[in-house]
Image (cartoon, rainbow, N blue to C red):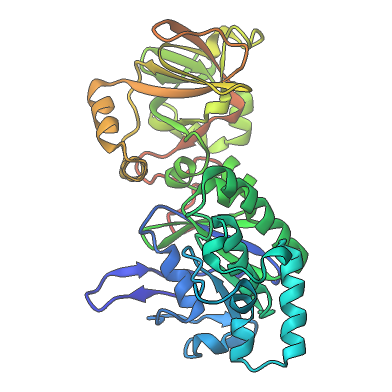
Length: 401
């Protein structure tokens, strides 16, 4: 389906996804990528400009929202402040003129599932944010719809409560077995909750896959940079062969890749002597003092700028003299993170600040030079012109999913 506004703006372009019965599908992407518009089209709150939406075998393009047999959970809770929790949950059933006994049965069942039994007589103002969101969930559950549509339902909650509610929604969806489309800007929510995740950018679908597949095999630079926290480090590198060994030259460093890299990414052979974008996830960088078995030809050295001790691990920000990747994909990711200016300044200086997820026993300190071991088995490579990941012998085109 597509959404084109009267001024010609394409908010969603040719979005094609089949969501299985009972599946938890997450739409994720930067602000303004079209994910909420897509959800509203499924709900019937936005007209569909092109294409077809089917719920089951039924085309619902021109079916009013109330007749689509879906229930929507909003970011704002959308509760009636003058009604009790019981009446808020029961509101949709009363509109449908269900029997009082059936309404009472469903409301009490939903309240029990959600732990709202003690609060049924309270008004929303007497509830916490998490309890209000449970009421909104209860209102959706009692309708027993074919699908739940959730639009960033946790964004108004504090960090600790978000983690708790993430787990509760996942458990609830699994217990109920109701097909769910969940929209979020938070890629951690997407990765921890979804059976599959659809990554969107500028109204276009980039990749649909399970969370681990997205993480291990991002189809392009954008997906690779968006999925993962902290984000993937991206630098320019030249692939070169010396004494029969393939290596990646980044700035003054050469990192040996080994034959195991070529065995899983045979298309790299075609890039020998050429520039690629090298992606290194923070968890694939370790303090060399802790990774004593790491070969000397698979290490970097950098000046430590920031050390964030998190108890079980240490986030270390260190600067290396290698040019950061600065394609349009990377610029967009930097804009979304609010640090586009810093990315531009780093590119002009020809230096990259990398983030490594070091073990808690690391003794590196700010202002010192750290030696960093690179796990070359987990590196990512992208074509700088197309932005596509380099994997098999046949490089996919931009339209491939």
